[in-house]
Amino acid sequence: MQDVKVESFPDYRLLLEATPTEFGHLFDTILINVTAFFRDPSVWEYIRQEIVPRVIEARGSADPIRIWTTGCSTGEEAYSVAMVFADALGDDDFKQRVKIYATDVDDGALQIGRHAIYDPTSLEAVPDDFRDRFFETVNDHVAFRADLRRSVISAGTTSCRTHRFRGSTCSSRATR
Image 1 (spheres, rainbow, N blue to C red):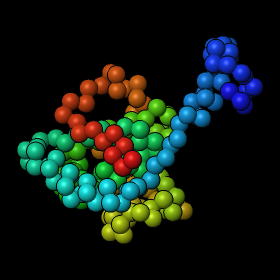
Image 2 (image 1 turned 30 degrees about the vertical axis):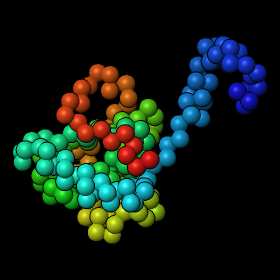
Image 3 (image 1 turned 30 degrees about the horizontal axis):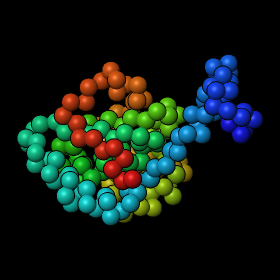
Image 4 (image 1 turned 90 degrees about the vertical axis):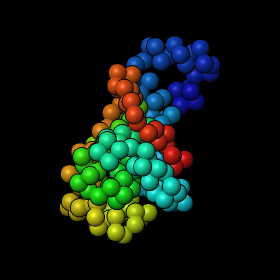
């Protein structure tokens, strides 16, 4: 409100209604888009050691595993989930059984996540063996492997109203 020199909430609402582009500016201000591969390493270690084995054990050996990561921004957390499940299941089993639904309200961030191409410095928290196994060099960037990336489905949160993620394990920003 300060940026547009509006004094009250009712006046700001009027501005939002009269100026459609202002909503986009407000939206960008609210979104924090904080994400990182394996953010909060101790939490991820717990997920790898305790949660992933329980999820796998709770499903039959051929049953699908669906995981929903909400507020995933540019995808680093969704791909962190993919890496720990692929590590636990093996690549072939992972590709056949796992679907990760990565949702966010920011379509621009989701677009980055769909491509899964990142600056190499973003891999600092990724274990070395995971870097070698799950990423490929593309020019001066790194890309999450395309064959595994197909298991990660990025969608805006409006899709959540029309899709049913029955049987999903929800990772509501588990690393917060």
